[in-house]
Image (cartoon, rainbow, N blue to C red; front, side):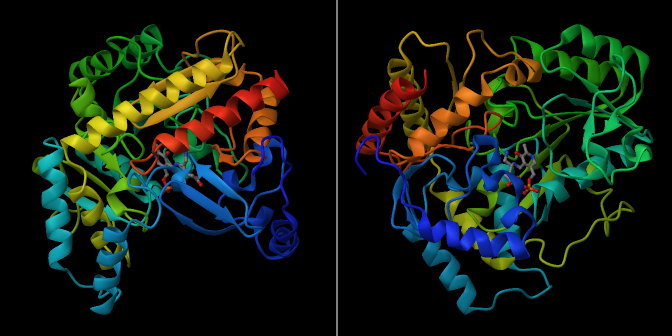
Length: 429
Ligand code: KE4
């Protein structure tokens, strides 16, 4: 697609007209609607490797990659073959399979703090269940989370900060009863004093965080911040819960807890673990996980939990993630960041990166927390994303998300990205 070319999106537009009559906002998950960047969604026809092709035949270098699962890119032949082989043996049994044991053993090898896990079909379910387990294990009810962190759409986590520091949170969505968030308290990310005050005042069942938050855009933990969470959890009898749905198996083989050396009590996993099919999990030491039914009394269940096709895709995905893959992904992400910084020149933009993750904040100042992300030039970011789409690059359509480069993004994909980014910056800033 020539630089500056506008998108031909007639087929997407026609599908969207039909979609909004039968799907809320025309989509099955809000961010896909592209409302945050001021355009209607593009409907995907197919994808392979780092490339996405929409129903109008427009080709894109894809940096959403289904929001993280596709660390090997789209339609990887080994993953497709694993899914096909599993499907030939049946799609679901409602009974245990060897694959579920193998996947749990594979995860335990990569994430030593996860001696045992329970699979679910979504990250939301895994987060909800991990919180229930933490409450059962501690006999406490209160939960500390961080502003801007997203852990799925369970009622108690659809919460916004209360009126004052360390006061009970308020629902952030209609339909969430005040009672559901009354035990949730919210502190700003990277606010050490806020954490100290909240954990001095309240007895928490859990301190829950994305160790490398990517749902306010990518905002890495400040120096020693995760260590502080570990120390406050130990000092007060709370469990430290890492939501590694995004960071897990991406930042490193063992996720953020390997990269930082800070070990949580429970880990929430998703995305990569299912290799692009619906799968997630929560896990930790046997002493905690054996409280979960039927070993213990904490009830949690799921018809398709540990689905054989998702397990096959997850196993194929993890088994290809060796040290060389992580080194390659980290180097590729750094190259992407460097090229985007060069394309931005001296414009008020912050390119933040971690292995396999990146965010371009439209901000003159570094972003340290959710308020900083909210203060970005959201209109400028939206215009830049629209300009990237018109030039064949598909960025995450929100300032509060991360780019997900994959092992399929090669030199040519990055060069196309840099050319489009430079032209888009010139157009909007
Ligand atoms: P799911 O229920 O969507 O499988 O997982 C929820 C979840 C939990 N924890 C973290 C850290 C997450 O990022 C997510 C979901 N991530 C979003 C993207 N930021 C999924 C995209 C969407 O909602 O459509």
